[in-house]
Image 1: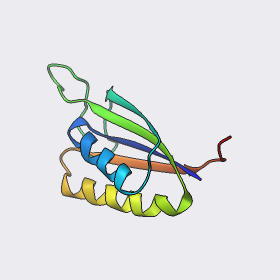
Image 2 (image 1 turned 90 degrees about the vertical axis):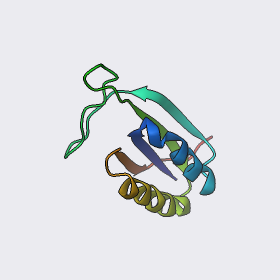
Image 3 (image 1 turned 120 degrees about the vertical axis):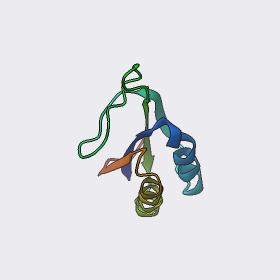
Image 4 (image 1 turned 60 degrees about the vertical axis):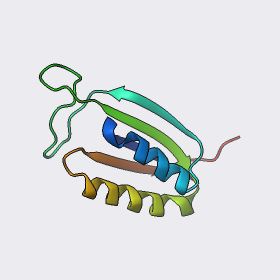
Length: 97
């Protein structure tokens, strides 16, 4: 089992959810309004007058075989929208009870 943490511009939130559904990642926890800044070229997303946009984040736990196809689809979504920003991180976790 793997955990996937996805951080993205709010404008991509619905599309990220659609990808989760498409690849069978039914269970998740989401934060709809987060502040942050990308590490390389990203502008701050602070929800302020100067930096008005915000981010969203989703944490989902998926079976191993779901992880790579989902990450590939998210990478394509990011590449199609480079001005918005999307990052996904995964790690191996134990099962549930």
